Image (tube, rainbow, N blue to C red):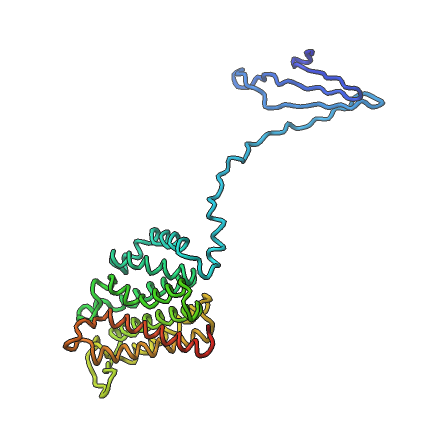
Length: 334
């Protein structure tokens, strides 16, 4: 150990190699003679050859903080891809996923549903997702968004005419079950493994929501834009807009378009094939026509006070699902 040029120097001799390490010494800054520690540290390594040792200056390596403290992802994250691809994930995963969606989207849900409606919709969404996967769940969400949107069309005008939906279009418990009871039934039968098979119950589910969306669209567009409305039964007399059982050209065309579009999305989501989409559209048209006839001939008549809009809707979507399942079985969709 020696001093050289004001610096401490350590010399370690190994046969064939000489290593000299300079210790950092305080340096004097040019500002007021204040002492600061030098940030420079060198290592000199010399290799003894035939002549004098050759000095090589190597930069000091700076150590980096270990990244072992990084936060690990929750275990369930690895299961998400499999859950999304599963056509029938079951009740427990579906309940967890649906709860997360409802928690995050409660403000949006309350724009179209009452609180009791939200609670019952949770049951509907969980059951459908458990049986028909994320694709089926997306269809229910599509119905809710599109159905709520068409209800708002010219809402002030419909309110002034007394033909608007109650509560500004927000749906309650009766409306939820009137829209989804057939879909829930198909989902429960599919989960239970009851015949005629999961694919046919899936087709019935799609047809039921095709029918309900078609009915909602036809009714709301007809009340907003229908120029002339007629009773759906002979002698097809002209009646005011909003009359139970009445139809209009504008509403009918809009309803068929909504049904076709919904069936197309169902096919894109893998719920049905092209044949199934056409069957669902046909079944929806048959059911909505029957619903108009039922509203024109029976609803509101003496002795049938129990036959409310929600009950008629439940009959309609159940008929749509039954027709679709029967037609699908006949052509071999199952």
